[in-house]
Length: 435
Ligand SMILES: Nc1ncnc2c1ncn2[C@@H]1O[C@H](COP(=O)(O)OP(=O)(O)OP(=O)(O)O)[C@@H](O)[C@H]1O
Ligand SMILES: [Mg+2]
Image 1 (cartoon, rainbow, N blue to C red):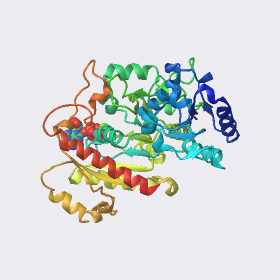
Image 2 (image 1 turned 45 degrees about the horizontal axis):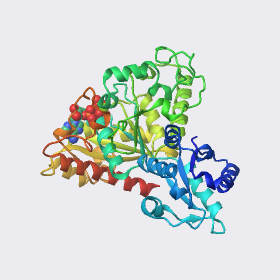
Image 3 (image 1 turned 90 degrees about the vertical axis):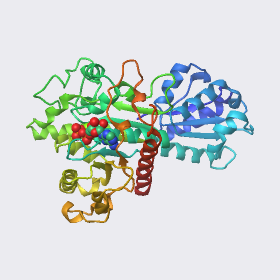
Image 4 (image 1 turned 60 degrees about the horizontal axis):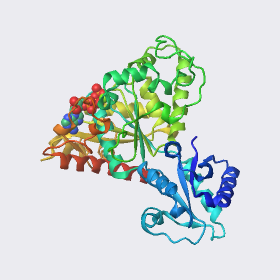
């Protein structure tokens, strides 16, 4: 569990301590710079790991460079900001623009501090939605959707997004990083296997589960701090702001498909679910890219997710993949944790709707699919575009440049970016309605 960051000016020590005590009474961990000093590297790291930021707004803090830099960092990282006014300071300039719109609480209100603790608690305990991009058919655009639709989600909606590469082919990882980088990261267990088994990431002298091809380690472990495990795709000086992270994939997780010890597998699944649950309070959205066949990994992804997004082509083979997927969801996942299903047509012609798509939307395939496919279909669809064709990352180029929403030049980019954003907005609306 991360902490709540308190941004303050050194002059406001009394109010800081009052807040600290109130948070402690509510069992909420906090972090603040000792004496309000401005060690940017350390303060930025603490902001990046925080679940929210409280800004003590006062005559002293609106003049403080450190507080201003805290607020800028929180904004750039998509962190929830909860300002709390502690004197009659008037907000002008930067503070008027960036802080005032969020300012609703002050210590002049009789229950101001209680309300503040309540707000902090909400942010601190919040669990973000989890999506699995899945279809039991290969090559329908799962990896493309995972990277590009959610890159657009991040650009349009903001917040902190975590992609997890659950496919042993690890194409999603290779979308952003070179194969060497991915393999080198996996060699240190800074990769997806550390969600399932205790690894060198958890204990320096532990054996690597990736090297134990036949065995499964059921040793319990505590999830490591996010920053030890993820890769920051938005790293780099001129990158777009915000957090867009990746837990990189590796081939070795395909060993679970061969394991015969069902008790051990069950334990490993529990590790995975618990670890994902832990990271849910550190992000605003988690997305799995998944493998195209039904395996242990499919079960893990389904049990952890709130929504399955199934990309499909406008053909009967994709339809069959979605039908099987729906059967697996119905038969294998407990109704209490069963994810919703949203089906997304991919690689459609922009100029005109195909007969297949029109028929599917009219319910003509509901009987063949064995469920009301027409109701599960998203209104928006992803057109075929050369800007979505895979291209290997180029050496020396930052990983975020692989996102269609941010990089590239050429005809047709504007409409495809619009389509990606429209899909992201529709998913966001579906999720808001569910919550
Ligand atoms: N809308 C699109 N327009 C153009 N090309 C696309 C589009 N969607 C996917 N592709 C291309 O189709 C190929 C397959 O896509 P992708 O790798 O995303 O599928 P997948 O479902 O993840 O495959 P797998 O089952 O192997 O994991 C890739 O070369 C990708 O670039
Ligand atoms: Mg894929």
